[in-house]
Length: 186
Image 1 (cartoon, helix red, strand yellow):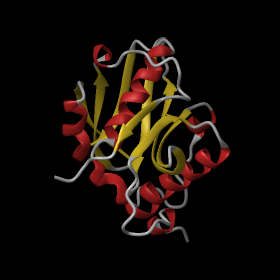
Image 2 (spheres, one colour; image 1 turned 60 degrees about the vertical axis):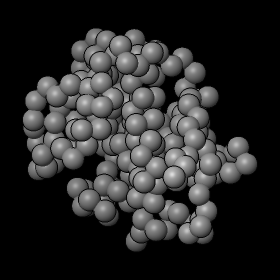
Image 3 (cartoon, helix red, strand yellow; image 1 turned 90 degrees about the vertical axis):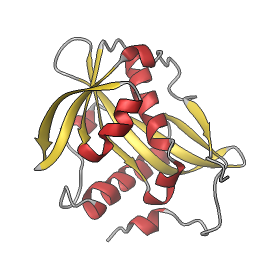
């Protein structure tokens, strides 16, 4: 059985200085992202019994946030997927997950959201939507999202939200992605 703690083999005192957030480019990135999703959505939250994969994964683009050591990506600590919707120009983001040990950084989820919308924007997105767990609505609102309606997904309260594309310039280079620095303690 996979445990969330098994995903982070680093010593308790280790804190990465920077993170690379990009489209998954190597198999290990994909594998660690899928393991992180299982740990968060199956083990931690209990939303799915064994695996959270679905038919969307067959055509979605997988984005990852990776801790870096010496400037080199080392471990996937966050992920989200993006995919085309049913109508022209419509894109969706889903399965946003950040490893519990890295949530205190506060910026990883926001950076994944920024890349998700920016990447879709570069691919012709005119409307970007997500089903957001209710506890995450304030974060999305801070990032220029609007609440469209409250709903339920997998029996849990969610909000259907829409990104304001004006906040998200297109990202045409998904493999370079974004680099973000660790939050420095005061």
